[in-house]
Image 1 (cartoon, rainbow, N blue to C red):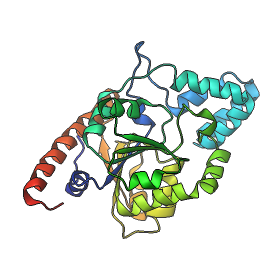
Image 2 (cartoon, helix red, strand yellow; image 1 turned 180 degrees about the vertical axis):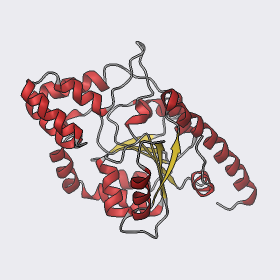
Image 3 (tube, rainbow, N blue to C red; image 1 turned 60 degrees about the horizontal axis):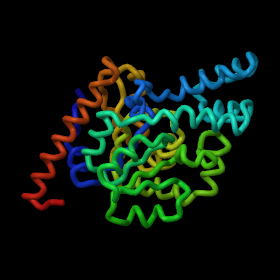
Length: 288
């Protein structure tokens, strides 16, 4: 089980934590047929099977370099825009994936701000079915700043949603354009990183948003609050993990990946209990 840090528990209890949900969380979901969403590597590999042998070989080489943005760029170019969008909708919209227990535990943490690069609608559909006051905002919305300053819970989709495939940030060029055209949004991400504690769940270090925060924010402001990254044991070499921790404000919290990462969900359930206990103490001490 994950050994939860007391500081992190206090921050969540005071709603000073931004939860960042990666693709690993969605992979816990299933639809009525027992189908689970594909991870990026599997999705790209399967989609590339529709290409010529030469193009497929190039795609696989890029994937080995973990350059998923460039891989997506080439894949969309070779497949064509309409075919690419059709494949995306077939994978992330039509299967109608349902929430998993891990979504429940994340919701139970009661964080006011949740960020996710996931295109699917699993988490926001679940939480809005419980509380329809929870807002979903996209990186290109004009009112994100006012929503952040409001009282409502908010889910911010940093790469867009499958509902608007033309505005998905899925390729290297789209990401570069978004950073320029929607620079205010990325400034808001930086502000959140300076004023809140981030908790990364089911995320990968290669995600462009995480890399942006690591390079442009956490690295520059070493005296800012620490941020926490949940990671499976042995998924990152100890030396590499140590260097990342020394050069950023990231602290890794490890869990066993056996039994389909079930320890992660169990650990989040335990975290929820600790947070609830801390909130009860806060009602007594009034030390909000």
